[in-house]
Length: 113
Length: 110
Image (cartoon, rainbow over the protein chains, first blue to last red):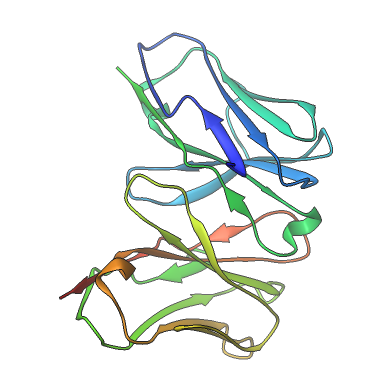
């Protein structure tokens, strides 16, 4: 039973399109995150939500809009996709303040052409 | 200067070797320290989690934190080809924000 699952695994789309990535966790964690991993494998936080409330928003273009319908789900919607948005996007979850460590999903590889 | 520095490698060792992976950091407020392993095209997997300074051992893995030097290490004993992956250090202060190193690519050859 997957702890943090995200869909889709792969996403290929044209510039200018709008796309969404979905994430669900069944660990009972309070906090969920979106991280972006670039071509050099560097992982950088984008957003965090605690119990549906936005906690961290790291200078991400406002074309990226996270939505948390409940504490087990955190989706990422991206408008007007650009070539530079191509990356792997990881969803993660943890107890509050990251105590005990973070559990990551398997990633969504987004390619913008 | 990045908040967390990590040698990207690659590090290539023979099977059975002891591997030492390291990170340095600049933010003295960091108090939670983690090591993640990431296989190609997979998500990061938590290997070790430590709070503040000291050592922690789990099987073949030992994590060390030296807050006075702002330096953390991961040792892998009796390394196996299945340990070949990218190892990421990560750390946080008292917030939800986890800062990662750039990762060290490790290759263990038979």
